[in-house]
Length: 186
Image 1 (cartoon, one colour):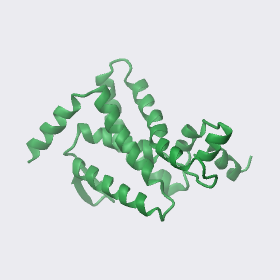
Image 2: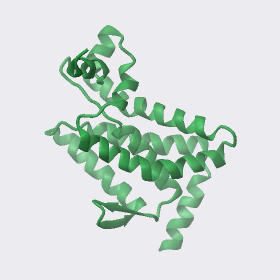
Image 3: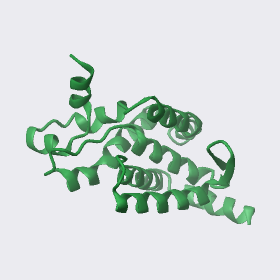
Image 4: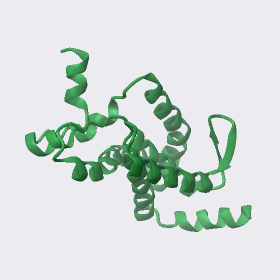
């Protein structure tokens, strides 16, 4: 099978999911990337936040932490793409790929636990996580409205939202530590 044929089979295409029932695309699209740069940024972000979050999952769910983390990540791939699926299911030309939505879920779940830890934009500018979260949300909304590039900004946004909702439902105490840490910083 040629690379382009393989990529076409794996890519998130809402039309094909709706018309041909190719449901695997919800998951497989999160494991392919457009190019090395796309893959690098997702892996880089996942590396820094994923390890911490997996450790937290092991504390919250003793004996099941790794399984819960994997479940969280895989479900985040799907959850991040659901709004795009409903919006684009009649458009046979829409395609999306990458793990950015799930990585956004991991980052935002991590920010709930460590809201004052600095996130370095391009390795230079360090800003507290909760401020980064606000800026990222604003940027994703604005870029999604414009729709001029080939990035599925709504997947970033809904992935981030999923990370917050998942952690709130599974460990609501996270909000106490979130607020305490921000108060201590101010």
